[in-house]
Length: 252
Image 1 (spheres, helix red, strand yellow):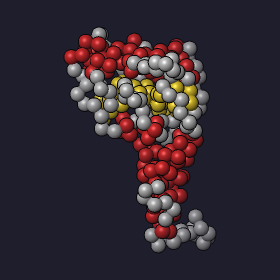
Image 2 (cartoon, one colour):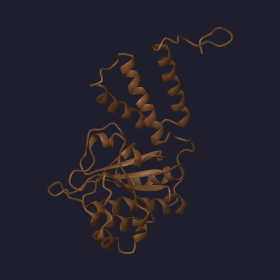
Image 3 (tube, rainbow, N blue to C red):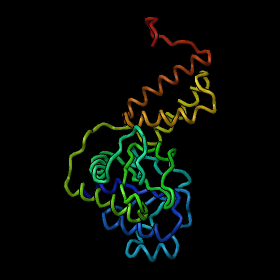
Image 4 (cartoon, rainbow, N blue to C red):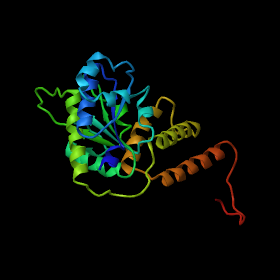
């Protein structure tokens, strides 16, 4: 169980108050999580963070700061984006309990990330597009003001509970990691422009939809390598390289 929880990282996107970061660290340690990442805020480990962390200073001491969400997700093969608002998205939408069970099962196979947004606005749609799952945390519609640390505590509890129940991993296949997917997306976006399929202004919108497609599909690393090979072959044709053949003269 401990080994699986060591595969789970908590990512806080642009937190505005050090106290919330400290409280999140305390919530994490209470539930056996120790890998804390922060995106876009490098000076959040202040006196208020230390005070609110209580005995979780070791989590703050190991905190890693990143300039982008993609960087914070490097190495993770599954990511869960939290939202307090139900959104019309085609990626799987989970409850916190479902997310805890899925997170534990994924963590038995590879690193995973729990992604939390800003205290006042949550995650943007572009940030959620980096996530394989959307986790909806319902709240009182008249006052949907769930504190950041409280959200971390709630989801971390569900992960801990699922780990304690020792649920079985769903699949042993090696799925593609975040950086593997980012390389594929960059390759695909460039090829769409080079082939004349999309104008540069249309590419971001198209890529958001394609991200949702591949986040649902959860391609294995070997499958993504095949797709990258296909893109490379198309690019060679566009560059005038023509079709490659084997010894029998048949196209490869």
